[in-house]
Amino acid sequence: MSVILQVREQKVTAEEIVPLLANYQLLPQLLREMIIDQAIAPFVCTPEEAEKACQAFYLQQRLTTETERQAWLRRRGMTPEQVRKLVTRALRLEKFKQATWETQIDAYFHRRKPQLDRVIYSVIHAKDSGIAQELYFRLQAGEQSFAELAPKYSIGQEARTKGIVGPVELGKLHPTLAKLLTVTQPGQLLPPTPIDQWFVILRLEKILPAELNDVTRWQLRHELFLKWLGQQVAELNPMNNSQKDGNLLPM
Image (cartoon, rainbow, N blue to C red):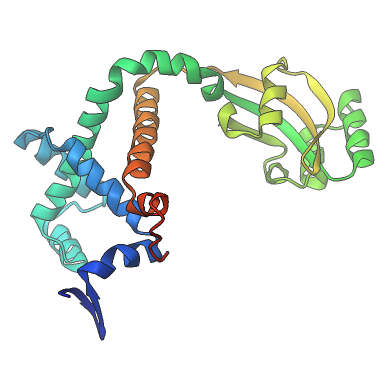
């Protein structure tokens, strides 16, 4: 068996490489990158696009002089050509996403919009129902505000933000919390509601409807791409296939 890799005294053969990648949970990542390379193969960048992408990359790394760039490359054992391949790969991937899913974005946005809308809300998490009810009565009577009560009584992260949370997408919230916010009018105070182990006092402050702008289009294209990529990896993962065949490789 031919040795294809050696790390100190350990030698790895071609037959051992797949189980080894699986042991380190690197096999799905390898498959993802290979699938991406195959998908973007037909897409190219012009010299102008490549140069612009490289300049943007160096600026992102805060490398403004040639001396700084060369030192950065030496520290990472990279060449300018490797950086060029890295940044143009990302650009080609974006071209692939646009060519594949751009025509689906409008319809996908309308399906996703209820989860993409953002909200700002005030909240207090309490573990004791009696305390939660007392805090609710104080808020309802106007005796004290969320800003006064949350830092002292709330157990959630909002204790550090005077009870305010957001803007945050509805799709990223607990399903029960998101549902309450979608049927609530701004300014409406909701009585303590049990959610998991908490009693939650809630007031919607503002709704920020999602807009189909360039940023949202990029986000939705990326979502569709990740779904597609996950399906591709699941179909091609040799570990999955081997299990189906009853030939279990070591994990």
